[in-house]
Image 1 (tube, helix red, strand yellow):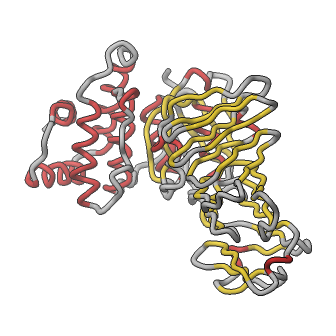
Image 2: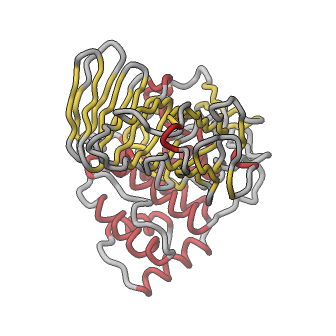
Length: 394
């Protein structure tokens, strides 16, 4: 079957048998990947101009069928390649189809690199569990270098590293403990901490969390810079408060995601369960599950409907984007892979928008290859810098 015929077959499929699934695997393994990708890209570009006017109704069903049969067979979470209904465009379909190919069929291009194409001489690995803990006495502990077990130097608590997590426990002197700890997760890192009240916090790359060693006051207050997902332990007598650059999120017991990077220019609080109140300068909004509060500096806090899968994708091991402009996509990639990006004068990065999802544990070259094929742009990697440009023939 020619690539063009295969594409039509893919777009028209509404159900899959085991025989068809085996045929699909065989096709992807035996046929020329370059021709297949080129045909997909041509199809994408033909449809791209009509995406906004005529989103194909079958797109969500296509991806549902793909991930139900291929991903379930590989024992991968069904959230890996989910399409969001309002952006179920051909662009998203092709990004995710390409993602399925690269992630699950492990294609390796053995040909030479032509001028202007993606150069991956020194491949860059994804981020990992790493963080630096600063104790109340100023002592610093690099957690990725510390083995599991007790961490000395913080009186009043049983502090230990356990399965790539930092866990605070109580001892006899706990009620008299004062002082704060600071947990810093660098670029290319992520980490989980269980606070002394049982609250669980997952920190994304380039994030800071400052918190009391023990919550002995009338409230539980922490300070965040960056991004975190929190599951707050319930305590009706001690409200849980997250302070972010003058903004405050008040919680009693809930789970939510808070993204507040300085260079993102907007702070987003997304509620998964429970209830929170987001406040700043007398302006406050109360959220219900499935809603998010968006704050832009100099403006009031606005309440919107949220995409929970999108907001929590990073915690679930995904790089996920929904009609995100290229600078936003690359900023996320830079934080996770600990790289920087530079744009050629030939490209207007704000004019390029991307929707789709990929696994966070992919090597950088796989991620850039998918973006290259879907967005029609070129990447060149030198050291830890990604250079973005238009193709030479465009």
